Image 1: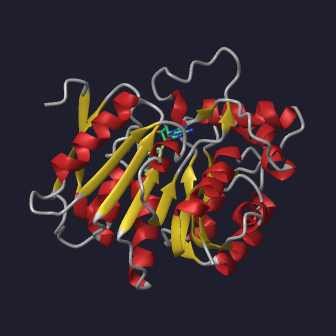
Image 2 (image 1 turned 45 degrees about the vertical axis):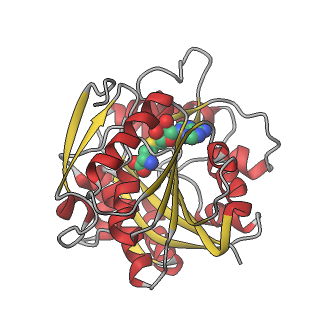
Length: 323
Ligand SMILES: C[S@@+](CC[C@H](N)C(=O)[O-])C[C@H]1O[C@@H](n2cnc3c(N)ncnc32)[C@H](O)[C@@H]1O
């Protein structure tokens, strides 16, 4: 029994992951959490990244006939993303990384406890930066998924405290292209760059990216690294932790980064209508065209938030295929 779990959340597999009766994982997932595990939004799947972005993307790929025998997630949190991949793709090998040892230990426990006992799972778990824990193992992947944070932490913020590392990042030593620094997408860029040699031919990276930046910049992320890039899915979210996140973007925007873009939630509702998401780059561009009239910079969005408005942003699942 894992001693670190402080609390646990229960996830109803079918409704949360949008799958039929599960055959590889349990009907209800019981996920233990440490203080630093990224909390699944069990009560509100629409605002949960795995329920509203990762699982629908995995289902889209599975429907396209994409086979995933080796799956890896960078920054797994509770391991819920890996469990979704196990149910949807049935991979034999699953790799998980995160920067905190307690988070990884707990995620490993969660995955093993919630996978059905006869499922032949080979789980590789490693603590460390991005894909570094996986370079030691002699493995390659068909699909690497990441939903990494974007906002550089200021000096006072302690990344090892609570869930800070789910929203904020440390400054990086690596040389980065100017557009990557300008739009605060360094971890996505570095993850996609590190993934290239670890992917099988035709393998892909899926990057969940809060599209507070132009779609062409998102596509350029992986195109500039030699991938074929497209948007698998485009959706929206109410901004979670709005004070921290919109405030964080506004502070960087004032220093000349971005500009970043947010929208009143009402405009996002109208743009997407009853659709949970649209798929493909062209439909995403149509949505953006409609939304351009309602766009708020981060500074404007922060003022609107302070005035009581509900603020959201679009989310893109960037699909980067190794040619
Ligand atoms: C927003 S949460 C996403 C959790 C889960 N993958 C999901 O999609 O819901 C981001 C996760 O990335 C982890 N993380 C942050 N920086 C990282 C890094 N440099 N390398 C590996 N993991 C990182 C955080 O600790 C956190 O668990």
